[in-house]
Length: 178
Image 1 (cartoon, rainbow, N blue to C red):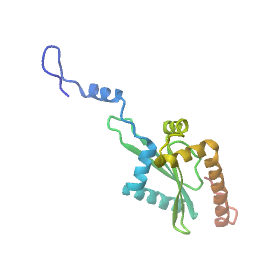
Image 2 (cartoon, rainbow, N blue to C red):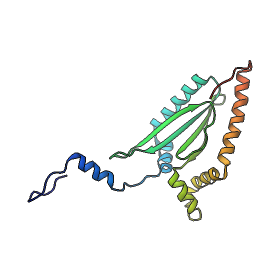
Image 3 (cartoon, rainbow, N blue to C red):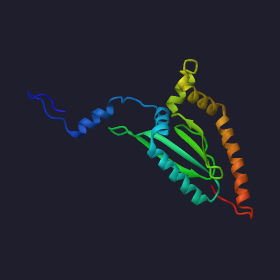
Image 4 (cartoon, rainbow, N blue to C red):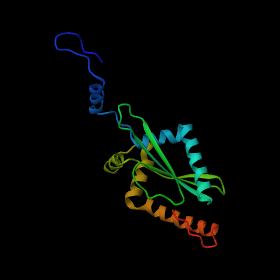
């Protein structure tokens, strides 16, 4: 960006431009919108998810694996989505900006347990629950389940099922650390 030549004008440095861009309020893209778009349309995401599942099955050597996915927008000049996936032997504790998948290799079924919006969106859903559009009702119900403790109850139920699976796989008394 150049300023017009004239008395007292100069060319802005890259540092000044980046500070100026960072100080502007960026157009916010909710993590839940980002997550829904990625989950439905992004082939690369699905390949990474399947690779994470394969690694989890290989490492844990049990038929059911959970994958915890966190998505957030980077805080750089060019905002881009960041995704972190982690395979787990146990179900994750519900938190903001998180999606949890369950993969059962016995029947090849991949299930989305929950997809929790980021904290700001969750608070907005709670305060505006009477005017949430039908298209976003699923996110509202997830947020309500989170605040009412139903997601944590689901996690505990999944953990009990997983403990049974681990006991059946390791029937000789080996303890598996998660």
